[in-house]
Length: 121
Image 1 (cartoon, one colour):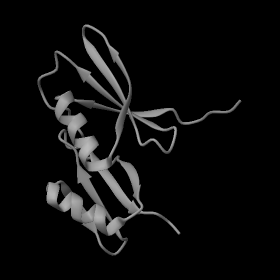
Image 2: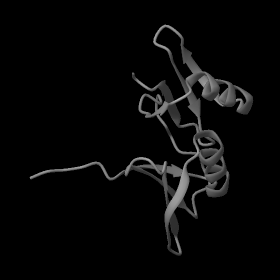
Image 3: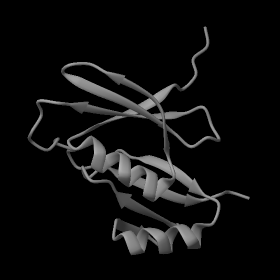
């Protein structure tokens, strides 16, 4: 029996705001969408790997999601780490830096943390 990654899911309050953020911050593009009366699922990809990020918008939800201590995260490799850092700095979305490890985190509109790491060479 074998398993492969399919996608990760994040629930969002404002789908359009989140789509704009993921496009601008990480160049993710919509690859699939499922519309239902009570929710919408949008799958985003990087056009390089098969892995997808699924954004779920529950249409009746009004209160922010409880992210706990925000100890979970998704990680993205940046082929030009310095350029990515400057881009995210201009977007004012960097929420934590660990210069000793050479990484930083950005926060999406719902407060989810996304780790940015340099490509390992």
